[in-house]
Image (tube, one colour):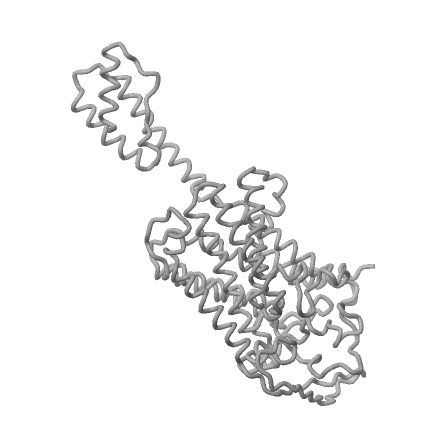
Length: 476
């Protein structure tokens, strides 16, 4: 076809019919265009040597050279792998939201984590991060040259996140009011935010690397068919979580709490034992749920979060929904440790990663903005409505347990928010309004370590005048 267009072009000129322009529809792909032009250049030289064609050949060569220079400049400038700005903005917004609720949550309990059932602004932070991880994986692994190497890198990255999370949230640092550091291995907290993200990242990455079929995608049904093994894993995770949460029998249990010494001398006053009456199956209250029981058996009660969110419930705090003194008639479970990033709840949290992964697949396989947003909005609205419906039936939204209804509502909200940011940033290109959030999203891990984990504040107050209390952090 290309040769015919050149012949007709030359013939037309010889007959006096000079075309207004030459069509190069077959040269859309830049790399292919360069190779094709070189081959067809030689064909023109061989077959049309007797025709006065200097301008035609020069035009073809000029087009080829222009494509080659453009491809080289694009590779040098890194434009071929331009970051998705909306995803960085969404990540930056999540980091900003996390800092807000951490710093202002004590002043405004309404935006702090819900004491148990229900959701607040703070309860969307973790699902947002997990959703973003899934979208990122869909983009990163769209082309794989070596699955073994990709698997090795994914495992290494997950281990780095796991170790960093243990160091930051395991009790090694003692807070902004204490310049000491160190942790008792017998009481280190093994679970946390980065640890949960590492679990979800690793599982979703392995499924994306190994459980993907090679097939053309031109519709939603074909998209599901290509990744049906990943949807099967999602279904298995959901069924496993639901079966254990509502099917496991939780027996009575007990725990010990050390008696704090209020005097100046460090005396060992022993501990107090609390008995919790359960003997139930399928309970989703703070005391007798299967999530806490699995953590107590596998990890050990001494390695769980020592100040769980349910200490702000009406049963455990006179200032509920804020922290406060424990009522005199408080139930025995009010003093018990409980980890909001537990093992069983992390199983359902991984499902959020897979939903984000689906959004990443849409981004890769559908090129039109309108088609992408339709593929995102419809399932997002469906998830939110289905989660609210389940909440009305009694499956309450609960971040500490990461219930199925909570996963649906927060994942759907993540999808709707991401679609809105995509429309604003990548479609209408309002980049100036979100430059700060985009920068925060690119440097999210550094900001989390320095600001959200108070590492920057701890480092600053290490410089003091005369006494540790005379530092810039405590300056009046």
